[in-house]
Length: 509
Image: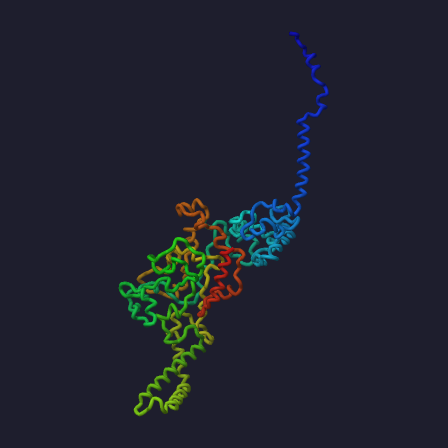
C-alpha cells in the first residue's frame, strides 16, 4: 500500500469551496424569505375588518356574547387602544372615546361618583380598567377582584381621592383585623320610636317578669285572637316571635315560618329574592294590644280632632236615638227627626268641650306618648317623624334571603336578652340591635384555606368576603331614596318597591 503524504491529501480539497452555496444554506435563505413575505401579508391582513375576530383574546361575556363572531367595532375604535395598560391606553382622549362608546348606545353611566372622586383620576379610568372582557361567557363583568378596589381604598383615608367625606376608612381585607372599617350605618339609631324588643319577646309581654301586665289570648279583642291563637304557651301567655311583626318582602320557599320556630321546615338553598323585611304596620301588628278606641293611627292634630269629634258626636246621637225610642209613648218612627236634629245642634255647639279630652289623649299620659316622642308645641303634627330606616346598611347590599339559614339571634342577639329587671323602652330603642362587623367575620373569610377550616367541605363560593359581595359601585341611591329613608305611618307598596329595585339592581349586576 502506497503511503499518502499530507501534501497530497490537501490537493484533494478545492480551495474555493467557501464560494459555493450549500443546498442547506439555500433552503434556509428561501424559507426565511417566504416567512418574511407571509408575515408582511398577515400583518396587512390583520388590519382589515375580515381578520378582526382573530385579534380577540377569548369569548365575550354573556352580556356581550352576541358580538363574538361579528361586531367588534361595537366596542373597539380604529387605532384607539381599549386596554388602559396598552400604549396610550390611559390617555385622556382615548379614555373619553372608549367610555363614550359604552355610554352612548347601551349604558347610561354618567359618572363614577364624581363628587367623591377626583376628576383627574376619572379621566384616566376607562370602563375596561375594571370590567375585563374576553374571559369567557361565564365570566361576570362585575364580579371583580378585590385588587380593583384596594388599589384606591387601601390608603383612601389619607389620600386625595375622597373630596367630601374624610371619615371614610381604609379597606383592604374584610376578614382581617383593621382591614375594613366598622359599619357606620350602625353607629346610632336615628328612630324616635320608644319600643322594647326585650319586653315583647317575653311571654305575655310584661314590663317586668311577674307583673300583672301580662297578655293572654282572652285579654285581646276577639277579632284579633285568631292571629295569635298559635302563639299561646303552656301557661296561656302570648309568646310573640320575630315573624309576627317582621314579614319578608319576597317569600322564600321553605322559610315561610322563619323566625317563628326552630322546628319549622327550612330549605337548604337560600334565595336572593328576599332583601328587606316589610315595615311595621300599626293596624296589623300593634292594634291588638294597643287599641286607640276607634281612633285611626297616624293622624295629625287637625285630623285627630275631627275624628274624635265625629266619634263622640256619633256616639251621643246614637245614645239620644235610643233614649227617644225607649221613651214612654214615643214611636220610634214618628216625631224623631226634630229632637235628633236639636240634639245634634246642641252637641256641635259644645264641641269645644272635646278639646280638653283630645289634649288629654295627647299629653304625657296619653296614648301617643307611649311609643312616640311628641312634636313641639304649635306643630301641626302630634308626634315626631318615626325616622326608622327602611334599609340599615346605606353603603352596602345585604340580602336577607341569602342568610335565611342563620337564626335571627345570630345577628340580633340584643333583641333576645332577658333579665329580671324592668325595661326602659326609650333607652333600648336607642340601641341598634344589629351585630357589627366582628359578627360577620365569623363566617365571611377572605382566604379560601381559612374559610375551609371553618366550613369543612363547603363550596368555595360560600361566605366569601370580596368587596363586590356587599358593594356595588355603579348603584348609587337616588335622591328620593336618600331623602325619604325613614318609614312613615303609611308605607306604600310603591315605596317598598323603589327600595327593592335599588338593591336588586346591585345584586343583578
